[in-house]
Length: 623
Image (cartoon, rainbow, N blue to C red; front, side):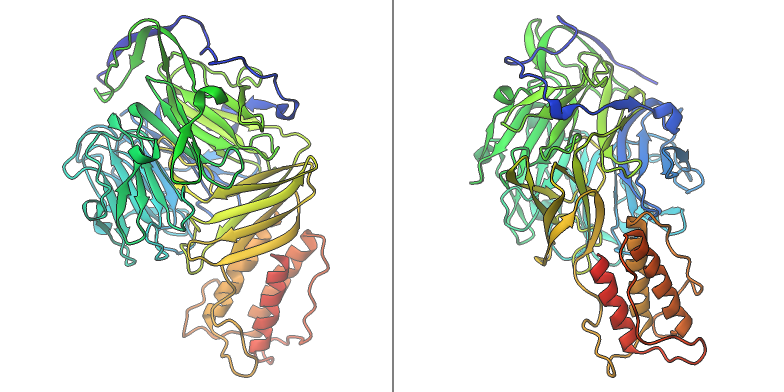
């Protein structure tokens, strides 16, 4: 393996704060424990991506990690539900015919079948042996690479990956950034709805011809109902592509005040000040980082320095280790205040209702940062106090909840050993919301979730958006965790990409909620008129199993495992199983099971529309 060595060192062992550091907040007193080895994820190598996602639908997020070195292969860690993981990449078929030269990766259900699929960018060296891969989930724990027939296979240098339904047609589209100035620039693959994609980047106006091996991330920054795209470029100004709502985009980065020109890497959208507008953090490998506060009028103000998150220190020399000639040596004069930021991710790790920020600092120049949100527009770096100030060559982090305890854990990787920091939690309350699309894309990517609660005697509204991919080649869990502090209940409003809104009031804290976009097919069911179909039964099964998993039960194993629309005969035993499976979920939720007036007699009772209607009402009541 070819390596490029340049030499760097910090005058001090830590990046110096830009201003006086605030007092460490009491609310941040959680404990993180590094458990990578005991959890089974402590691999060592050149890792470039972490992606959290529940690929097997068992209610626990799994982890996919890419590797760039030839003597390593990508890893799929299946969450066993007991705090440990099993490496199953080969068993899942994810290694068939491929070496390892991967960079970005992101989970999403591109075909709306209820199973997470996976895109993997091929790394930083053009090679026909390492093309872009699109792994379709077969629903049985295995995957099939469909990149070629889907029209997304590419052997050039691809890096960042992120999914979004940019045209709100209910199908997830795919953006892939390239490392160098590839012919045609970056890719925006429009989902055709038939398993194939068409590259529309030139037509849409998103084919930046600058290097963009940094992060790419989608968000609706202007609250107009469609997703916009930020691209971190190396060797030129960054781009903010505003969605025009007609399939095209306009780069408004300069006008919006976010066209940083440096060595930008990690990109993270998040409403850190809880004003209802999504803000933007951009890490930079050579320069101070940027925290762009959204002004609510289409412009941003960089407040990184006064917020104490500019992530800078005094450099005396430079030390960068790259691979295969992918990384360029940056010449930074001695004494320059420069950054070392690579990855960046928002999360409310202590569940106090305010988003905190993790920054992975690479190049062996500075320790990683965990900025705690003080709730007043400033942050305090708590990494050292919490034992997370590793100084090495980490490239990215990603947040997920390995044990479903309501407190987010952090996976970190880079050029060295993986780290998994388990969050022990504190006394603060929380709520987890997982929207499910019906008219919108199944993952509800782009959905806006508002959670309002009284925390510390003040009414506070938090806003999150469901995303799939972003940051610096990595992906946080798509389940949205909201800290509630001392609040025992919260109100939730979900706005789906289709525009559909669902509002729920007085939801009890410390629970997981999975909300579907709308009712069911043929809604409402009309007793005496509606004909019961296999589709109705399949929907009921999916919704009931989602409830069971959310309540900590296993998915129910149905007697007739497959229902074929138009041919399967619905029997009394099928209805009886649905009732029994749902009753267990009610019991687990400490609620009295629903009563069904019409008894079922196997072999004699005719399944009627009323049976379906009763089950639907009971499901919605528990959701």
